[in-house]
Length: 127
Length: 246
Image (cartoon, rainbow over all chains, first blue to last red; front, side, top):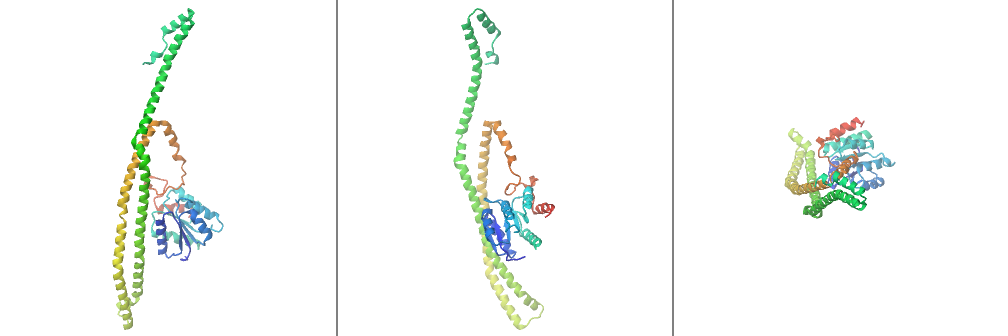
C-alpha cells in the first residue's frame, strides 16, 4: 500500500474529519485533504489526483451516497476506491451503497482497528 | 325540548284538512308554515350550539398563553440551546484532540529514542559491550531520562486538559433536559389541538410516515435493539456485505 497516496476525507463535522485524519496518520498516511460535503468534494476529486475517498453518508448539500454515484458515473473517477464511514445503519442503505459500488462500509461508532482492517482489505483486493 | 315537540300531530293534521275543506287557504298556509318553522328551529339551535362550542374552543385555544409563549419565545430559544450544545460538544472534542495531538509526538519521540538504545542496552545486559559503546549508551540513557523528565509533566498537564474538557457533558445535559421539557409541552398542546379538530386530522396524519423512503438517511439509530431493519454493529455490516458477495 502506497503511504503517500492522496486521500480525501469527506464529512460535515470537522471533529470527525480530524479523528479520521489522525487515525490515517497513525497508519502512516500523511497526504490527506478534507471536504465538508459531496458538493465540495466532487470538484476537488475532478481536479486533483486523489487515490482514495473516505466519506460520510448524511451531509447537507450532496450526501455521501450521491457522491459515490457521481464518482462511479465519471469516467476519470470511476476506478477510485470509496470507503463509507457513517452512522447510517439500515440494511437497505448498506445494500444500496453496495449496489452503488462502495468498496467498504464502516458504521459509527468505529475503532482504529476496524479502519485499518477495511483499508487493508480494500487495497489487498485492488492490487 | 323533546324530539316529538316539533313533529306534526294528528290533531294538527286534522285541523289542516278541516281548514282546507272549509276553503280557508290562507289560514291553512299559515298553519303549515308554523309547523315547518318549529321543525327548522331545532336545526338552527343545533347548528348555533355547535358554532358556539367551536368558537369557544378556538378562543380558549388561542388564549392559552402557553401556546403564544411556546411559539414566540421557547421554540426559537430551544433552537439556540441546541446550537449551543453542538458548539459545546465541538469545542470539547477539539480541546481533547488538541491535547491528544500534543501528546502523541512526545510518546512517539520517547519510543523512538528507546528503540535506538535497545540493541546497545541488550549488549550491556549480556555483558558484551565495549567501553566506547558503553559511553555512548550512557549519553543515550541520559538523553532519554532528561526528555522523559521534561515530557512527563507536560503529558500530565495535557491529560488534565482532556479531563477538564469533559465538563461539556454536565452543561449540555442540563440544556438538553430543558429542551426535552419543552418538547413535552409542545406535545401536550398538539394533542389538545388534535382533540379539537378530531378525526379529520388523524386520517391525514396516518398516511405520512409510510411515504418516507427506506433508504433515506436517518442519522444515528438510537434504538437499534428494538428494530429489525438496522444492523447492530460492524460485524452485522460485514455479514450483510459478504452475503451480497463482497
